[in-house]
Image 1: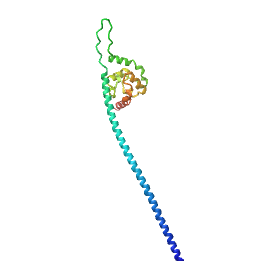
Image 2 (image 1 turned 30 degrees about the horizontal axis):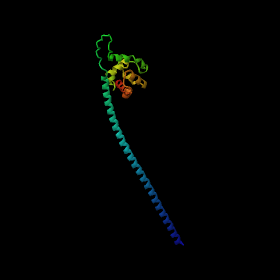
Image 3 (image 1 turned 120 degrees about the vertical axis):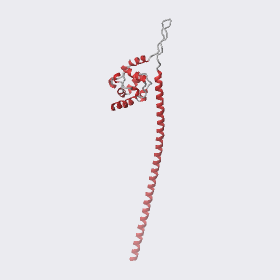
Image 4 (image 1 turned 60 degrees about the horizontal axis):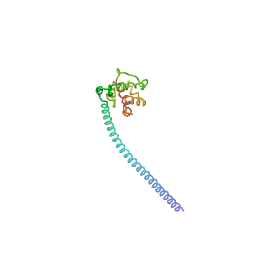
Length: 203
């Protein structure tokens, strides 16, 4: 009787130990499976990150190339604008019938025409100035010597005034100085003027 009881206890203990081993193996397999899935996910994330990094590098190179091309085009365009206004030609001799040929438009006439448009500009908001407070507006990229004269004729002399332009001011000034449509906005005059103004304030 005691022997049978002992054998039964041994059998139960063996079953319990066997169950423990089976359970432990199952947990270990589940852990390894989860770990493998996490490693695969991590590898996929690394590959995706590498792809995004390569894409970003390509975009950066393309942007740098586009900026170089834009700078070259702007320089060529400014050179063309500087040469675009011809020197006034001498007046032809009067004809026998008394009719004079039309004179070529001189820079002075252009500036007078622009000056007449100054009433379209909101100087109450951007501020007023004169030649005694004049900044070197040619420091703004896109402003050549004649464009500077046009701005002065319109009543715009300082970086401070240009830095206060809003979209409506850009459009009106662009039209008043007979500039290429949208050129002031594309060249970023407002931001350039703010930087130049802040640089003067620090001196």
